[in-house]
Length: 225
Length: 225
DNA sequence: TTAATTTTTTAGGCAATACTAAATATTATA
DNA sequence: TATAATATTTAGTATTGCCTAAAAAATTAA
Image 1: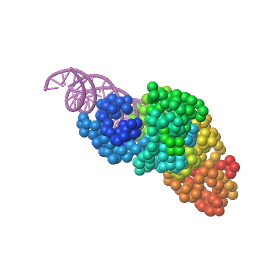
Image 2: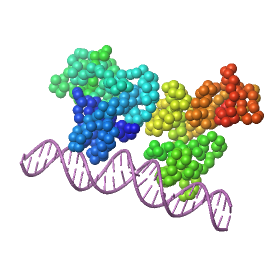
Image 3: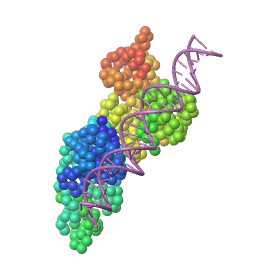
Image 4: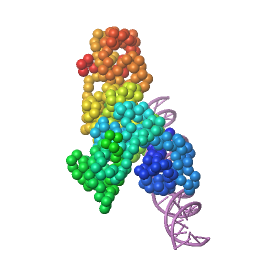
């Protein structure tokens, strides 16, 4: 039996080792990195690492980096799956805002019932991506892939569609909401300013200028991707 | 902040003091009664009582009975509300069996989000009764009333409708499922056997004989109640 | 109404999960 | 390479929520 707290550690390890933006292939994670991500002290994390190792969920040698075992990865992905399915449910079935869904899903993801997850999955029509555009691992732990690129790389004159964001902070999501940008929003790149790498865009006949930082964090695909 | 464990104590107190079958008006609850209901030791319960008292959720004097404060009652009813709304959701929206819904709802009832509960309530069309026929307290803690009587009290020849059960054990629910009896099932009382107080009934042209015990635990109302 | 029984409370422990402070190991820098 | 800086581990503490065993109070019964 994996406790709620242990589940959160596994989820954090999955995120830091594979899912965080910019990670190409799996990377090992340090105790302090995990501690700072979870906002806990290293000593606390260290103790938990012992327990996770005893349960064969991670590999960890004294003073070395942490990697997930097969079982740890499988269990971690299960939690990611639940989290993203619940987010999708809250967004599409209960009309929660894009911004509110995360913290409720943080709780719902720990509900222990295989059947419940499968029923929700079916109710949603077996979605591959959540409302943030992130892929939902299937029940076997396979992660659907989709080709996305940063809005910064889109050429002048091209039209693209927002598929995901690489920053999910409240500040960023709120800003996007102000701009009326969400998943599946169509964006036309009108101009690219060489000086500060900012981008002039058009959304439904409204023009905006996005800073380089914002453009970097908007992941887009072809219009019919 | 009320912890998950504290919520379960409050829910148990609401049940034992007001909601358990056969309770007409509120009754005080003893430590040992609560302990045995929660399958915990009296000493454990005793400690928790101190915490609940500190939080002004119960009244409790040494060696005396326990009563809920206004705040304790309100909070307890909130949990009952959530439990019954989730049961209704699982049953009507996800096609869970009558029998499976309880233990999943036991987990879901602790999710902390007012908004989620209200959204689920709306999705369900603001139901007054859950799939077991039990009343769902509204957001102000008011409990809808419905006149029900035991099947044992129905006269020979009368038709009635199952509205609730006073035993929700797995054994009993399974037995009802075998008989194809669920909420809103119509029952015609064909005969009442004085000898053992058993009841001959008809459900959709099928005849059965129910023991006194079973008839006692089936709560019915008039056909159009 | 005293004695036996039951209930409640207290005392002392344990596991999970967090903390601070101190010790130790590793890595980086001068 | 020696030292400074950083990371990790250990040791000791706190809280929640559970336990057993024993003491104290209340209730029941002879």
